[in-house]
Image (cartoon, rainbow, N blue to C red; front, side, top):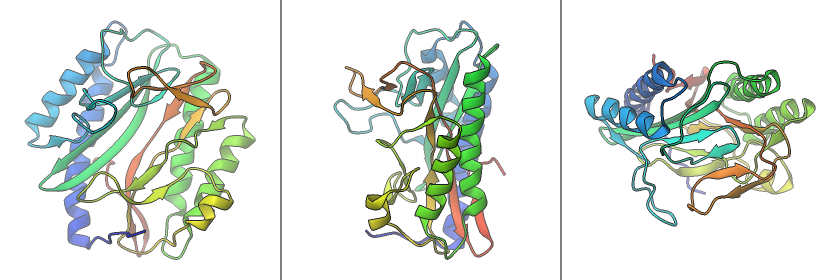
Length: 256
């Protein structure tokens, strides 16, 4: 496992990319209303990225077929990697927005889940728990901690409340490339501890918990990208790009 450490100057360059990601999130939150299609959201995100002088990281990403969208837009039972289409957002939907961009050779990557109108209470609480898992991670990032300790805290919090913790998709290192070592799981077991890392100053991680309202099992649809819950229940996804500093965690995609 070859973790690439970043200097403080490089981390600040990643913050520039992070600001663009946050700008996209803010704009999408403004327009994500009942009746808008996910394709319209995707087009607007590309406009904001272009206007900012950034390059989107997702469109054309290699897979079964090159990923066709600017964003990953995942509604309700869709966990990650949803593709913009003619599907209209409805009152009561939850809309996962995942955005990655590169600016001057450095990447930023973050996800949020937008609650549209009157979202059922149990779904809303699941979204809040997912975001709280991300906050647990951020609060516990510091040099000297092992990632499995943090993943264990996230998993215990989620499972104690009856939520499923998706294990097929995990966070990752990030820097000049969107996906670098190490892998950053949101759970801990014997296998993940065998590949554990000790957090050290200069490591930058994309931390991205994904919870489900029902069982944690997922499947990929025939488009080769969209991942949904097998039981059809809702799922939420939150993510920040986070640098490990001597003082703890520095969130690079919070817009600051």
